[in-house]
Image (cartoon, rainbow, N blue to C red; front, side, top):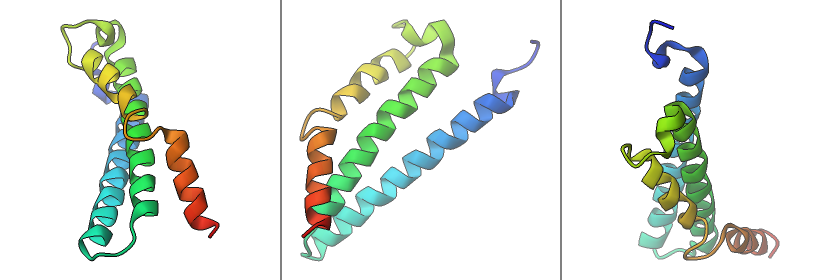
Length: 109
């Protein structure tokens, strides 16, 4: 189309959504760490941070693969490895479903 794909509104919106979710993830992690440092209970906040950050990683890298098009699946670009790495974050150290259980049990006490 004779211009950088970053000039297209759809790509700009994807990048804005990605950056917003990454920043929200960062703040959730900081909040959990702050509570831990103060010696407060933090299991709910840690579970929220883990859940949101891991799902954000997957969502963000899926968008990155889409932005890269066919190159997103080749080993020439880092995004292919990031896709594999992001998916495992939803599984190790407690699956997303386990994190939801921890959160809901804390909220329903």
